[in-house]
Amino acid sequence: MNSKRFFILFIVTCLLLVGVWLPAGAAPNFQQQPSTPTPGADGRIIYIVQPGDSCIRVAVLNGISVEQLRQLNSKLDENCTLVEGQELLVGIISVAGTPTAGPSPTLAPPTASPTPFTGTTEICILLFEDSNGNAIREVTEPAIAGGAVSVTENNGEYSAQQDTIIPADAAAYQGICFSDVPEGSYNITMGVPDNYNATVNLDYSLVVHAGDRAEVGFGAQSKDVVVDPASQQTETPEKTPVIGIFGGLLLLGGAGLGYYAWRSAKPERKLRGMLRK
Image 1 (tube, rainbow, N blue to C red):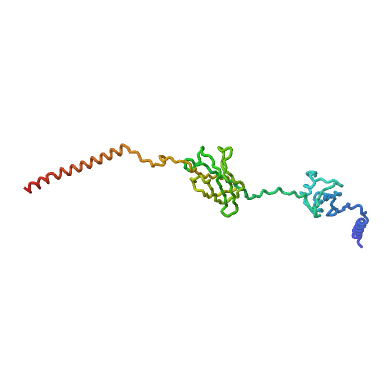
Image 2: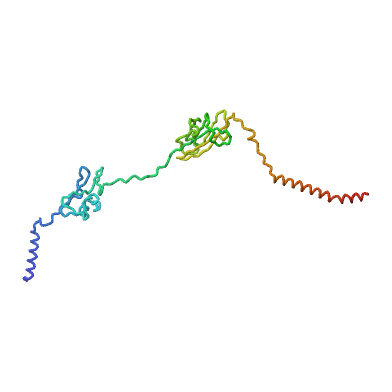
């Protein structure tokens, strides 16, 4: 055999024997942490940092991202430096027992969804002494007691009745009020006392919306009130000087036309008289 080839074969064989005889401790000690550590009593899943661990390796072993690992362990520095034996939080188990990777879920604030406003309205009704009969309440016209008013929703969903009164503070009185009335279309009917005559229509239609406040007034006049006949006379229009002058000119014009016609007919009468002779 060629001495050169023998030398090369001898060197390769020695290298193989050295590789086999190397002690097992010469290889780096790599112990893989279980991918799913056992959660503690509080539901926290803790990973113990092993030699050679990095944030990427820990995240991969526990099925989370590096960003989630940082969120769960806020004390990690910018370079994500790990120390052997360091405890890292890698998840929090839910009440049902399912591990939740990443930060503990935070409930979002409730969304302010619009709630339909189904409020009510208020209807105040006043029966007043319509002394002058103009169907408008004056400051000096007081409220009338003893009447009866009813408020009825057209579809029958609401109906209520009250009697009219005269309160102690009559000057600021706005009438009897029906509260918590649902919105809708209503018919209001007023009944006046026996010794009164109504000066307005005693039936009134009203549409109200939630949150509104409606005020309705009914006038009535006592039967004992004596109406001044002079106030009921129809006023005659005043004669003006212009009308008088114009009438006088018409009279003069008519008289002038009559005189002219008479003068024009005088020669004709003379000629007729001569012919007769």
